[in-house]
Length: 266
Image 1 (tube, rainbow, N blue to C red):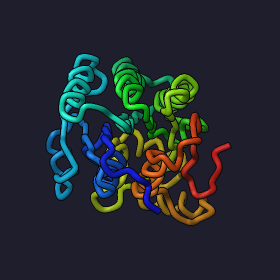
Image 2 (image 1 turned 90 degrees about the vertical axis):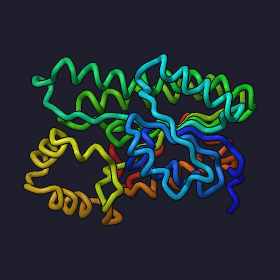
Image 3 (image 1 turned 30 degrees about the vertical axis):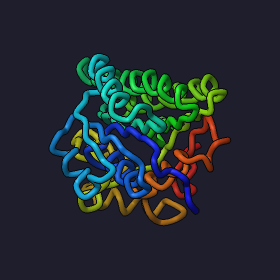
Image 4 (image 1 turned 180 degrees about the vertical axis):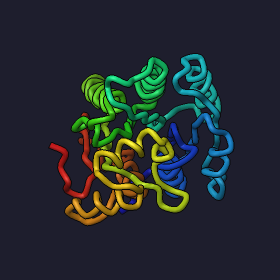
């Protein structure tokens, strides 16, 4: 099925690795002019390698308002508009409630919440002018059902999901949709997978909760619990993002889509 995405303009945050890189590359394969955004310049270069025909890279800290303003100004100057925003940039820091540190609280608030807000504000203005828009928020199963040991991350993802729904109710009349993709765990596989698993705090708490000693054992145990006997992949997320970005999904708005193989979080 032709999704009709060729020629659209997309911006993907967190595109220097993992899910964000996979989504940005998928857009390029559909001939979408795609702006890869991340704070990691070398990661951006690696992610966009081989996709240069439709990819451009911008280094930006989305938690800094001035940087986001400059980013969208450059996008408008170069492309004239924006049709698709995928918010993927996020941090996942784990820790028991009584041990939370101020710097962790501030970091999650800045990146996971302010980053999504700032980019949405500027994207919506361009999308209204274009008469078409797709706001796609890469959320988490922890935004559908909070996870023990992840109070900051879970709370931020609940916020992001609520923010997406509220935005959807506001912008739908302009032919703009806003939806959240809520994948279950995406583990490292070769050079792909969610970057969050490089955080030792997340790994330590996850191993403790599952009563295992290694990431491999954790992956095996959780995959066995899944009805499909596997975990979510970056490709699963990218394929859903492509559909949500297309005109074919035009009546899907304000939804939080669990991407979990049937392992419902409720």
